Image (cartoon, rainbow, N blue to C red; front, side):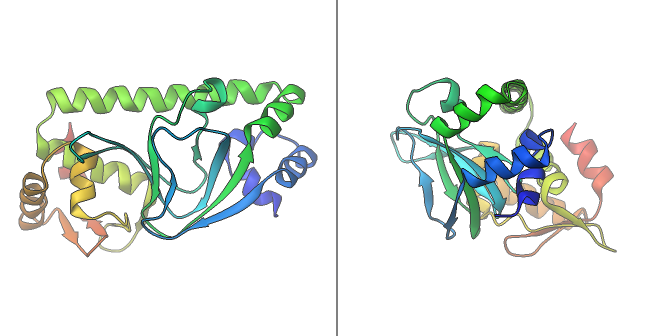
Length: 225
C-alpha cells in the first residue's frame, strides 16, 4: 500500500514517513458499490475507515423509514472515529453514494499506534470538534434558514469539497439524487426541487443528472447567508 495515501490524510500528515509506512501495514482495503452499506446504525464499531476515493453518506433512519443525512464525506476523510473514544454502537449508517475505496484500521491496532504517537489523539479530537461544529451549524440552519437558503449552502459546501473549476463555473459531481439532497438539507423533495428550479431559471446553476455546475457563486453565497 502506498504511503502517499496515508500522507494525504490530515490526521496522519504529521507522521514521519517511517511511521506512515508502519501504519499502512496495519490497514486493509475495502471497496463498495454505489448503494452498498459500510455499516448500519446500531452496529458495533470496531474499525476506523479512511476514504481513498468515492463518497459516503452518513445518516439516521427514523422509525417511519425517513432518512436524515448528517454528512457527505469524500477522499481523505475519516469515518468511525467516534467509536474509538466511545465503545457504544454506531450512531449513524454509512452508505456509498458512488463506487468507493476505503482503508480499514482496527481500533486495537490504532490505539496501540497512538500509544507511541500521542499527538495523533490531539488531531483526532480536533477532527471530532470540527464535525461537531458542523453539526451545530446544520441544526441552526434548520431553525433559522429557509429551504432555498439551505439548498444554496449545501451546494456551496459540496462545491468547496468536490468541485472542479471550469470555464463556466464550478462543476460538482456530487453523486446525489434530488431526494438525497432533500434529506441533506432537511426538507421535502418537492420543496428542494422548486428551489433548484428557481436557481436554474435565474441562471445561477445548471443541473446535470447527479452533478451540478455553479455559475453564479456570488448569488448563491448571498442567498445562503
